[in-house]
Image 1 (cartoon, helix red, strand yellow):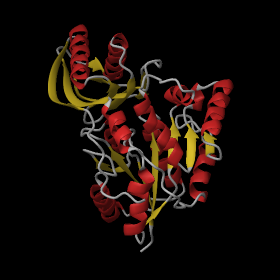
Image 2 (cartoon, rainbow, N blue to C red):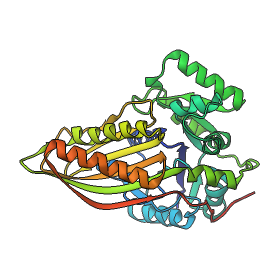
Image 3 (cartoon, one colour):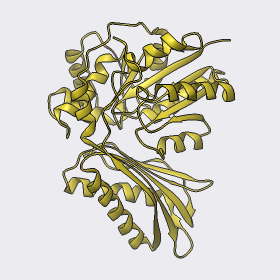
Length: 364
């Protein structure tokens, strides 16, 4: 049996991993490859999984903890995808607040499942907004403990892609590259835009031409790592909106929800690491995003549809108290329903701070 190529694309929350994975998958499929994707999150009800499946991709999911803490679940998902889809390539997206991936995921996959899976180099996407602040020693809305995770992600990567260059000036891009080269000399750095495709050909070539080479695993202070993750409130919820009359604009609805929550977070001085809200029917999907406090809300997937009702899925990762975050989400949703003559129902709401990571395996 031929080996499945396994590539993991890391990066901090809001770096654009899901958009990049979709573009990677399409490019590989255009070359005749069969591709499957694996999403990962600390909670359930993932907007990313919905979005990728709606785009026609075969997607497995590892919810409830990061790959390192649910290594056996990751292996089970890979085996299931192998049986049902027989992919040539699997692209995996780890939790955006996770690091130490080489010693807890990649090396164990190679050692225990190397006959079936051929692991590629660890690549990460660099999020420009928070990245420029953290690399220049400004907190970027996070404490030093949360910034520690961001920097460790860069340290362990074989390939660092500065994403979202379509939103950067040439001066901003060069400043960011200089900060990276100064902090991490010798690191392979490539500028890309997962949104427009700029630089993506070189990125894919580099990914396939760089074999995974085990190195001396980096030191990680798991106390700082755990405390940095625990500063983030994690909220996944599902709501239902129904029109009292005939229909409502689904795109406008999800964008208004994200924009309203952004304003509330600004008032509370709560820095969003990433916020995704989707609106879904049996045939339509709309997704809006917010990646930091300084950026506007963005409609990343447009449905172009007016619908009588829709399920709304909220994935929020914010430096805030989890209870406060839940109250703000419900407040914004109720205000939107009232303004637009909609009926709001709350189906589920899960809020927490991530617990201490306890990897199944950790190579040293």
